Image 1 (cartoon, one colour):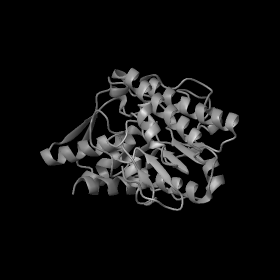
Image 2 (cartoon, helix red, strand yellow):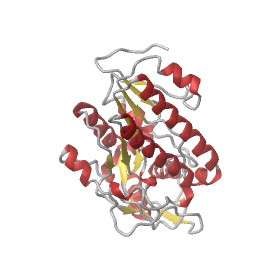
Image 3 (cartoon, helix red, strand yellow):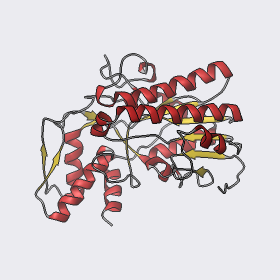
Image 4 (cartoon, one colour):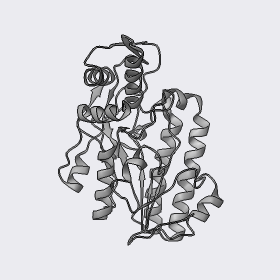
Length: 305
């Protein structure tokens, strides 16, 4: 495989995923790989990948999916993610990568907590939500492995913990997509079919912070440019219910002309998991997040082209 060279050799895994596709605009000189290039669950492939010296690794690759897929395939989720995380960290350390930044998810936090928004100190203070338990444990294990490597080998590896993501480069797949992407896909489909309503799973009551992928990429770029090595949450202040998010999307994308029907029987998932962005702001200063209204408008415009 052909590799480009730059002053700092940066490897990005998950290069064709949601965040990786957005990140290319912010770190154009990095090398982006996907599962078509290397199978990161195979030690032989990871060993080959690290025959090249990488100064910095940004680890985005993971097995991810929606609530139903997490419920149906927990063994695959934990197996594939644990293998990828462990092998990449092992060979980054052996090869001498100076920096390693992993992207986790707020699903690593306790299912129920005594106070919100949760700070980074809440990470190990309770079990994650049951519907995506296996996926969450694989991400918690990644955080523990990074912290353990830093302690034993005197490294400066870190992880970012973003809230729920959405963006133009997500794929509309009602079984695998992030919620906002699936929601916009349903609106697009309804308008095409001239339907009068959209159908959503659950009750609409859970609260969620949704982060526009470009915003996470801007934070990653700041970490690279300033050589930040602390781990922290990345999340906007907005924390809306699923129903409020759906109503906002219908207003922005369909002029409020679609009814929203919830089935009230499918699992809701975690009721609340909002996190604090105070540590992030202390580290990088004031940061202007893209509002959900603006982000939804951008993404829907792209999908409806």
